[in-house]
Structures are given as structure tokens and as C-alpha cells.
Amino acid sequence: MKKKFGGKSGNMTFLGMTALMSAASIVFNSCNGKTDVKEFEKITSQEHPTTQMVPKIDDESVETDKRIIYLTFDDGPNQGTENLLKILNKRNVCATAFLVGKHAYGSKRQKDDLELLKSNPLIELANHSFTHAHNKYTDFYKSADAVVRDFDIAKDSLKLHDKIARTPGRNIWRLNNINVTDIKSSTNAANGLQKAGYKVIGWDLEWRPSQKMTLKGSHEAMIKKVDSIFLNDLEKTSRHLVFLTHDQYLRDADSINELDMFIEKLQKSNKFVFRKISQYPKINDILN
Image 1 (cartoon, helix red, strand yellow):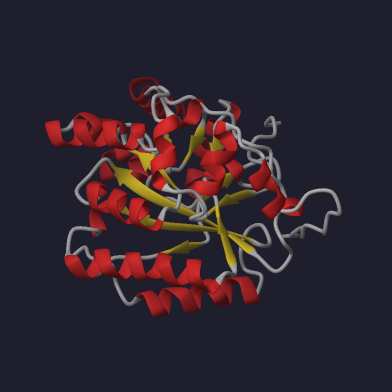
Image 2 (cartoon, one colour; image 1 turned 135 degrees about the vertical axis):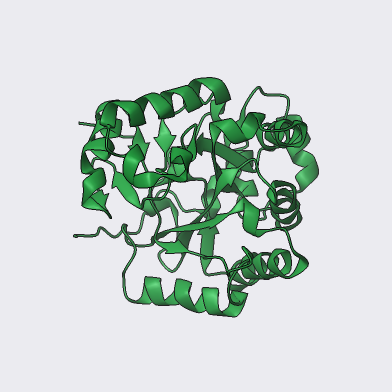
């Protein structure tokens, strides 16, 4: 797969974007720990974070020695969602939550967590299906029409304002410039989502769970994996890494601390910029 690098720009730099003091730029700066959390109160009255204008930002607006990381968390609202929000608020870093529709209405706590997610400008919401395939992935992907209906139900029930999606149990990409299907029997369903206008995002690196459904391994090991992916140019789009883990792995003190330290050390290295997934290159292009 051919990858594209962004060049330098004499007109606009990443740091220069801080001069744009619109609501959108406040949210963007918050992704990288540059804005005090109190400033977010000015914009949290909006109905939903995804209704805000997403600033058009490409590789040229990021210094060439920086790399971009998209923190994404699947299966929320779920056990661990509140712990995730505490970490993001503490580190003042943005992320994208890929939500499961039925989880949003599974209990009062999950309903409350959905409202917390909606009201937090650090969080962007995206579609991870309504049923999560009932955790029967092979059967789920047999019918492309049924898969599209499932995502449509999630979109409507969650009142999502974009068609950014991630498939349950599959690392699938469907953008104009990226077409990847990890398990080929899911190809027709993936193509059906793309035809329906969904921009399907997979991931470059996953922090997997242990047998106890906690984060497996240490933050130091995950940082080494991040560095290795960038060093060897293994990400789907050069300089851009989509990171995945799950809300439900953040239930124990050790996992919470490991994710917190992972983010903190990435920030302190001064090598990375954090963005929401709606700012991934070419994701907002009209699909063919």
C-alpha cells in the first residue's frame, strides 16, 4: 500500500493554528493538552460534540517531526467508561468513542455514561453498530443488508451526526484511499457499508486484554510498539496511527494507571499530536 507523507508549509504550521480562537480550534487544541479544561465550559452547551465544525487540517499543518495518534475506544458506554473519561480529562487529551447502540440503553448507568460522553468536548462519538453482531461475527457478516440496517439503527438511536463507523470483531477499512478487509468473508458487508455512505475505520495498533479482561502488558511495551510502527512505516497512512482499546478493560486500578501513564509519556515526549478520528486524512472526502 502506497503511503503519502505531508510536506512542509510556509503559510501555516500546527502551532500557528492556536491563533484561531473559534470553538472548533479550542476543541482541537484541547486534544494536545494546550487548553485548560475550564475553557471547555464555554462550548459544552452544544447538543453534541460532532455537531461542531471540524477544522480542515492536513499533514502540512503538523510539524514534520511530529506524528499523529488517534486514541479510539470501543464498546461504550460500558464498564470502564467513567474511568476512561477521568483519564482523558486529567491529561486533557481527546479521543473517539465508538459506541454500541444497545449498550447506551442497557442500564441507567450506561444511559448516564452516554450523557457524560455527549457533553464532553474531548470526546467524539462514532458508530460501532447497534448489536455488536450479538458477538456472533461470522453469522452477522453473511448479510450485507442486515449489517447496514444494524449500523443505521445505531446511528439513529444514538443521534450521531456523521457516518464514521467501526465494524465489531473486524479490522476493516473503507475510505476512498484505503480498502482493507481482514477476514475476506466480510467483504460484501464492508462494501455495503461503504455504498451506504459509511466511512469505515479500523486500527493500526490494539492494546489487547489479558484473560481477566484487563489491559495486557505495560505502557512501556505499548510505547515501544507505537515507536516501532512509525519507525517501520507500518501505519495505514504514514505519520498517522489509529490506536484501539476498549472501555471495559479499564475497570481495575492497574489498567487505569497503565493507560494514564501511556498517554502521559506520549505527551511528554513531545513527538506526537493527538486528534479525533474525524480529522484522519481524507476521511471527509465524498465516497465513490
